[in-house]
Length: 212
Image (cartoon, rainbow, N blue to C red):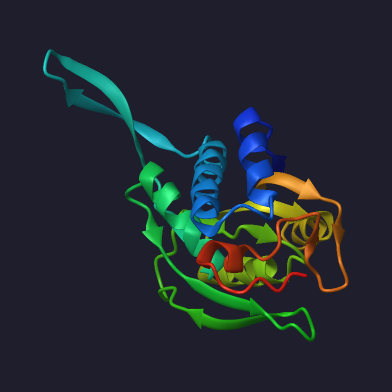
């Protein structure tokens, strides 16, 4: 299944509103990212494969399910790091593989500076974690890396996306899935999402916010 899923939920709407607010301090901002990442991951993992398993409760044996796929979490450094722990809480067995990408401020093109994916044994499902999908350049670079690794199923989890970035990912990797809390209409001349929430990395890590 491929497509774009703008997740509709009252909790997402309320948490996202507070996340956008410029007066929200970094500690609360990180908590909100954590909550939203959990809600997105819940939606994005509904089609994971499971198999039956029998367990012994204190009273009787009963049937249950367990995951059969290797799941990889791929946070795009640095902002994607804030989404790792809440997803690991849901999938403790997941592997975490980091990709370092930053946007060249002159060209708005992604620059890869770190990748430690193993040469063999790709995961069955990769969840790319990146709070912001703006131009789509970094996500396309990450999708290209995961395709070259041989990952058969890739999903992107973003808190906010711009229509331009969504369209680029859809056109370049039509088989991928995008799960997002909200799709905003515009990018400004500096390629920041509008209305957006500023620079997610700066707000998460309490560094200087230069989003203007």
